[in-house]
Image (cartoon, rainbow over all chains, first blue to last red; front, top):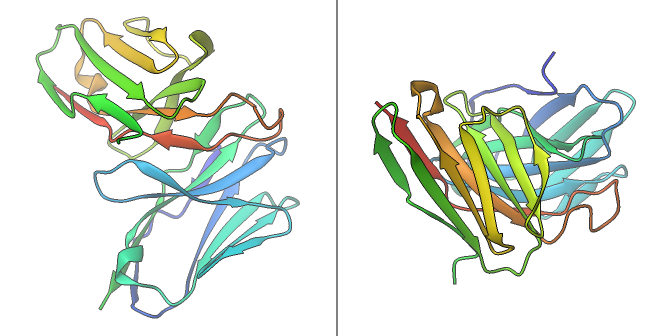
Length: 109
Length: 119
């Protein structure tokens, strides 16, 4: 089983749509969780951290379910500029960031 | 005013050659990293240095040798390049290593990547 698993997509949605990505992780001892965004042929950039209580940043909402070892990202009112690959990232008990392979989002006009 | 920079951006070379990739950060961070992103897009850590000291050394062939002359620089030297080394190599830095405590990862800032192609 991969340490961090994501649906690779692509998710192809119209502008204005709401889209959700899920991610599961295998190490129950993991403590910190993140979503990074990677544009085509660019470096990953931190989108948001994921807290146990869930957190929101504008149109983006992240949720964590420790019991199910599951993280989600919800994007509301999708913009063309949201098109990118979204990487689920887990800080594991050996103090390393473990990246999922990413979920590709395409927002069409 | 680039925060994390890498050179070169592209590197095309023949099998068996030795090459180096340089990384510099001007953020005043203590910790630097090298990651490899393969064709399947998995980003995996290779090495991490904190204040010039090696703290993470993943199962990487010993043909790969990182060098940190000071805490703002982390270079990666690769000997006897193989076809399987073709990938994008990202350098990253963070303020510290576990600066927020053992449960929290410091935000990592990535360089633009070096696309290595071995022919």
